[in-house]
Image 1 (cartoon, rainbow, N blue to C red):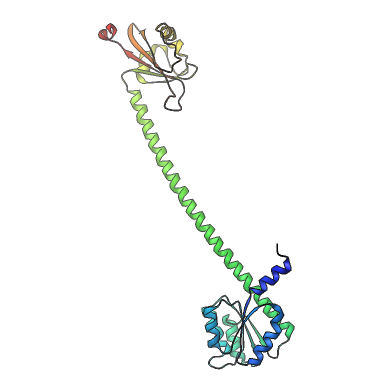
Image 2: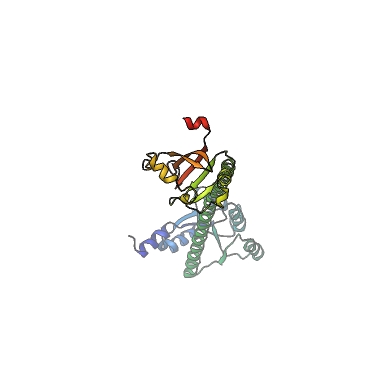
Length: 289
């Protein structure tokens, strides 16, 4: 693992500084001054040459003179600001054309204005501060991009969840319609249907069953043996043990009429529990069978 000092040196080595001045001795002096800082230093003698470098190489900080051939430092910085807005731009000049420099500073084209001759320590500190400012801006930009990506992913996830929720709501609505239809069909079946829980308590009875046992009063919650006392005995007498999970059946006499009782356990094809009892009225022909 790299030490903090090693990491700091690596960070400095990745910092790119562009020096722009038409005087070669000034560029050489600045190079010597910044040699110990381990920056990657690029140089240009005109604004046009500097723009060519910017077009091909990522640059963090620019230090430029004001008076140069072809274009002034202010003109160069205005172009650089528009084309490369993330660069930090410092003007280092012996000429103080106050109005143009002030205008450029107000427009944001210039971060700092320093005069020649410069103080070595002050200049090094200003450049170092410019790099720190650039790195902080880059980090903020990176965090903003990551935040936008996270927001986009969250929005996509929320959209998927909304779609799943809508599908589930539609499925629930469809299931409710199916259940309502099934309940209505069950209520109007011409045979008595009674639902029993695992303790043989009545939990469901359709209209035909209610009509058949009307004198007994409300059926729900009663034990089936209280409504049809002979049912379980008759099933056992007919050889139905109920252990196989198959439908049990027997003949019953209810209100002086003959019924075929079919008792079927539930849960084979669903999560239902208990039994379903159907009472089918027998006519003379059915009795003979």
